[in-house]
Length: 101
Image (cartoon, rainbow, N blue to C red; front, top):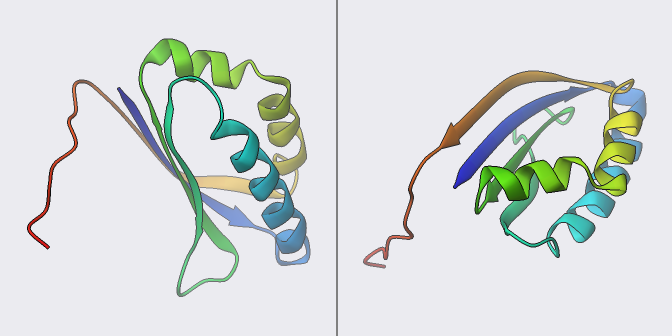
């Protein structure tokens, strides 16, 4: 599995465009083969900071996602209006754990 967690800093005047674009790519990406989690989240302290968490079943499914037209279009739209502030990518075997609550 591949887990990606990325933090974006968005220019204030482009916040709404970022949100619309993130919503669109999320709807499309969630239906892709191998996509287990695909979520954008807003920071609670900085309204212009967003996070994306992605979990893919394999590097091959992540690579297929990155080659999709909607993913390329998203990167073209978000590139000029935001910048990745931090990025963490993890790979390896993972399993879902049951929590006691």
